[in-house]
Length: 192
View 1 (cartoon, rainbow, N blue to C red):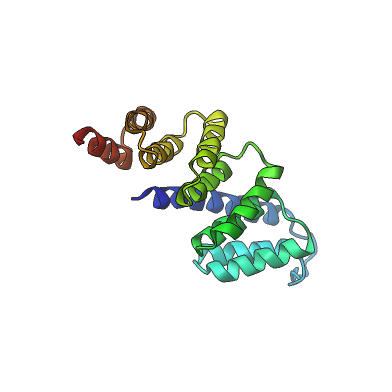
View 2: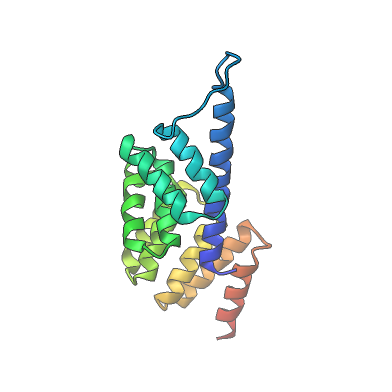
């Protein structure tokens, strides 16, 4: 798996968990009457629920449109803004994605996933200082996330800081010894 695939796998797991939480919360809010509740297509909560469903089905454009419509009715929480950024990043609209990540980060500065995602975009754009800043922020939030060390190692390889990159890959492997991608990258660097 590539760095991007690992990042997307982590983000997908996060989204799946949030969808599960959201659905569980909706079950708790069922009306006590015997009449079935028919959600309105104008209801932002319903739109977010539908967007999550579309996302899970892989319909990224439709999911984005539903999230965007919900956000236009009521400013959405950081997790929805993050999802919008993630979808836009998947759709290769990095500048738009970055704007949503920034908005999400304003509300939730302690979200390592947002920092990792922003670092990924900045790295792809060659803005290494910004990428490094966000990876440092992610490590400050959770120093036990092997994916952050792996991403940092990849950034340092791009920056031609090979010895530092090796240390990052080693740190990732100390946390998760079966992290094959980190192991492979470390082996490549040690052969050079």
